[in-house]
Length: 421
Image 1 (tube, rainbow, N blue to C red):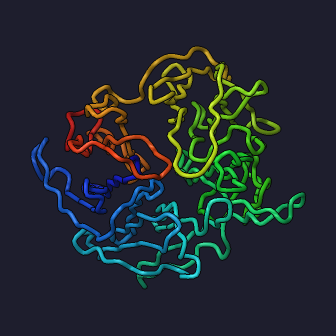
Image 2: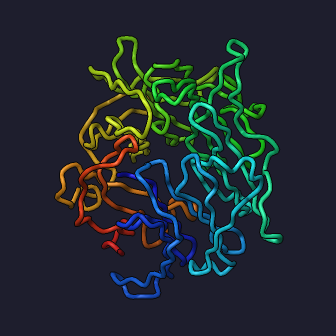
Image 3: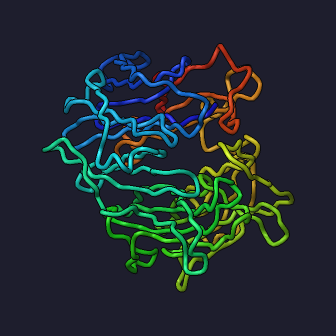
């Protein structure tokens, strides 16, 4: 099954957090350049927690300003599971820390993420609560006291009712915060009214320099906590409108303006991809696909996506390549600077040696994790690192009765060079 693993490179130190074939959580580190190309010298630490069948149980890595490694993961509506090393960053010194800021809001944790602000300070964000009724918290680490405190006093999102529906509750599903080329954090989210995936609605955006003070896409201040239908609403997609959490992406066009891609149903009920960016009076939205057919998703658990948005990138021509998977096959839609679709073509944003499935078990797919270290995907003189592995698709978090026993390798790959495993 797919589950989020993590890769973090800072300077000449590299970390990987992963699950073994026995489902044990392991963190490994190495010093880059300490061995000849093509050889490895990894130090590993098993953290004493074992994965079940839940694809929500991703792992997150972070480094503070003193160099201590922070690890959180294997959580879906369970108490916080968090480990910290000493300032050396040596994985063998990782020890479990049972609480961060407030144990009362760390009893039902999901979606851990570490972020470094411009001054290097380490922030941890997570959801506490369940689908349709959860709150998102931000904590700040103090290296002097080796302790966490609230970055902001209240949850970033407040899904308790609205003027029209005061008795309803929603939980926000966020993409990001993502550090952009402008030095700002960009945050995209949808709201969900129930555990049913079909009840995602209201695609919304905000940006911030410090993760405390937030503005809309034009720099106007936004009040927090964000409530339903507040913030900078990109597209007020209603419940059952074809919007899905975890499948909207933040990128940037040739001028550095934020560009959002997502899918929803069109007026005829077909699933379509849309692109949106800030305009003079609001969000400029264009449908960039021309499909016939509908991905009718609903229910609980991790879905096996029929459409997976991979983000977009600017081409040398100034056009934008919007990448996605359709039933596991890579495609891209090329749009011009006015967001008008020019062509759709089979493609892959990754080299064939990375994107091609190597295992022989039917149903295997390639998973890729981009480096979460320097610059959110560091490009050094030697290239860009990513983590690659293969798994079966999602199964709504239910056990499978058969799976590969001769799996392929988990690899750290340096794009532009031979694999450095």
